[in-house]
Image (cartoon, rainbow over all chains, first blue to last red):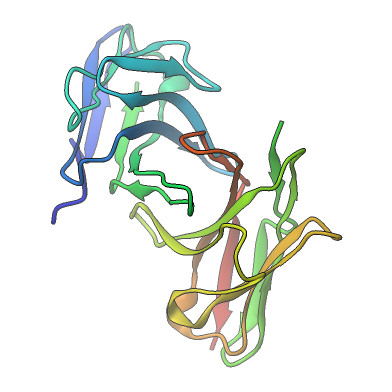
Length: 114
Length: 113
């Protein structure tokens, strides 16, 4: 089982460029999430999805877009990259039941905008 | 609204000493509580979770945490620290099926030989 797979692992972007961070899970989880992690700030939720075709904003959605056309994939799009988007991005998925669940995280994408 | 406060952004312990990482939560309804560990350049891994069953929860690698409603706390402990425990630890809270998690700002654990 691969779990949650994120690509690429590292990327350097120039200001104003665009890119898509890929996230795929093979656990048939309904829920998927994108977080960014900045030093001393913990994890901040960017967007999340409760199923194919359904997405919603998290705490820090500005400058990002998502789509969820399949259960497996949840790509994160950065349009017009800015230095403030330099961060480590984590994708996660979960399958919640009444006993409670937990996230399965990908290994992260380290993005630098210069 | 839910929130998590982790007291101490950096904790250092000697190898073999007790590990205590503090987490306090705020929630208007019964919470689900989690501890995650992050090793350098890796994603987060679930250590343990509290989901309204036993208040003392045992996790992987010898860690455990106790849910104390009266203190709104969910502190993480390990009787004897090992060098391999050096990592970043995050406490998180959630309250409903499918809801998002709220993470603390993390505690970096250093283990001194």
